[in-house]
Image (cartoon, rainbow, N blue to C red; front, top):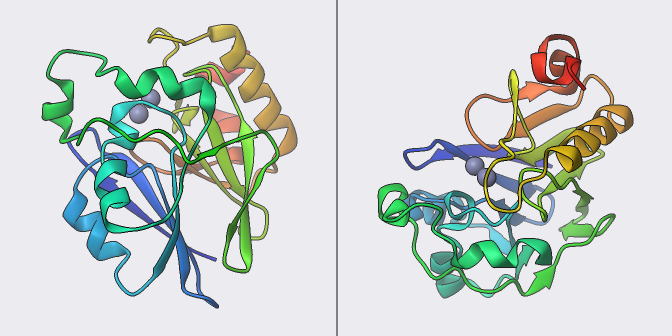
Length: 209
Ligand SMILES: [Zn+2]
Ligand SMILES: [Zn+2]
């Protein structure tokens, strides 16, 4: 499995392109902005899924464009459906370059679901708190966790937006840190990547859990 992370839009959302090299099949996770770059990134590949870690428009802003160009299904957790119509702040969609309205999901994510990417799979870990439907995607073979806004290098997702829940966020973080080993690479929703081990040692928010 090959992972390429594209930092898109003014909020530097990490859009992950996950490719199974044997079959040329690929999925895009969190296609938030910069449609031209997204389209050229998947050139020559067979796009078999468009995945959202959660429903915030900076993460789903270009699902519409991709759905217009490909027949790949859009996967999102149903608990975040209410966010697809929420721009969070007036004019925010223009600022971040989102193309709205975001289509409804074709496939509803569920805890434990395995999403096929050619001969590889991504496992869904439902980790509510930042939003009620936030899901991480975990590659067991590559030891990569695509975590969306659950976790950042030195930080955690904010819980003060609609549907946020600090108690749920704590439980989700405790679960991820109890289940995953230190060498798992974490692709965060924005900015730099990190590892489970680095955050376990240095993340001040996690010490407070
Ligand atoms: Zn978010
Ligand atoms: Zn975000």
